[in-house]
Length: 622
Image: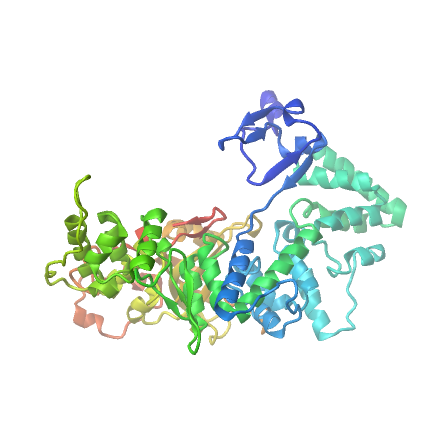
């Protein structure tokens, strides 16, 4: 135990910070121990970030933001297709349509305010200025949550909208100036220092020492010493009683080190506004740029596509005669703009092969058939088969199975030994009669090849089998506490450390998305399905907040896998949707599927091909 106590808090292993950089006035090798990094020519300091800061190095955290690249690409698309040069520093920052979109939480794909937690709060905070957005992007962080700032801030904003004369309460009168922008709550990291100085009389050095001690959380003795100094300083400097001083201390104790500095919040708030403005006014270009920057943000590409389609945007599937390597914006003139999926979305094909295919099409014109594609693209048999299975060759062969057969024949006929003559684009023999893919097989093929399905939705394909199961759109019309059964594809799984074991699922169907909350007991009973199943069926009760005060949730009682049926008996991997012993004729009778056990769990290929999603803060996982 003594040895364990001595090593407690020491570094356990060496790892590399994803964006950390330190600067010194002389070579680092003369200042601290360094080791070679995995990347050639890079070095890693063996000290951790806190030790580097203590030694006086300038420490910088360089963030790579995919949204910056997406915004830049979006501006380029606008110039190319609309002839408009957009300077994002000169756009109107009081645009009513942009703020209306934000206040309605219609923010899928938008920087920083697209998560479900942000959407929940947007309907309540209703940001109307850039200053409001600065607070908004900072509020859904562990610091403000643990410090008890979120609910008071939201409630006070609501009170001020109803009654502009409402007097915001402050922990102490001296903190009015410090906490005025955040309505008496601590939301920004800077405010920890300002509160310590204004309330407890700390010097700037003492305040910074407090912030460091609390952010590191390594020395309980050091934190306790600062606490004693804080309580004593508040009494001496402001005449505050111990209860008031303790209350203010608790506000900063839960916060320090886990929140944004205000400058960080301002920069992120500005980018949140700019991305929303582009999404509102140039939706096709913005979606195209988002798809080209994936993986990024909260939602997989499939969800971005379906959400855009619900807003009326036209998205076209991959096509060897129309698609570029990346997604593109097409159309214009008299008709609306469209987004065309890029061939780079097809998994398993090397980028060089796709680039060669596009170059051959530009040089020699559209491909006439599969033989022409095989001859001119230079793609091997495996690549041709992947193109065929994705649907990119449907215009050449009619359907995917025919394209797949022709791809195999064409690839074989154009395999020429090295040093011999070049292959000629000879015609292909007539394909045998092949059954076309049914609806479910097409969905599986889409997800297996590109991870995106443009022409259909998995839940639309299953809807006829889900009597008694509400769509996400229907939830909006149901009363509070209504027993409901919902089903959908899981697009996010979250279990925040601040949620005390509660798990949040986001389910998507053909009409929208539904928030599902799994209490700890429900999650533990159904953790296997909650963690791994791409399609789930949930029964619970509807939780509807007061009008304009949040989003609708389903509090789950039961959860199980929803495994889809085959539409044809030829699909060997799945089975008809009727319980064992029940005939198809009996299945036609009205169903009473109000509980998950009312629907059978059947075999499925969906588990293997479902899009990777945000899963328990570990990035996108299948």
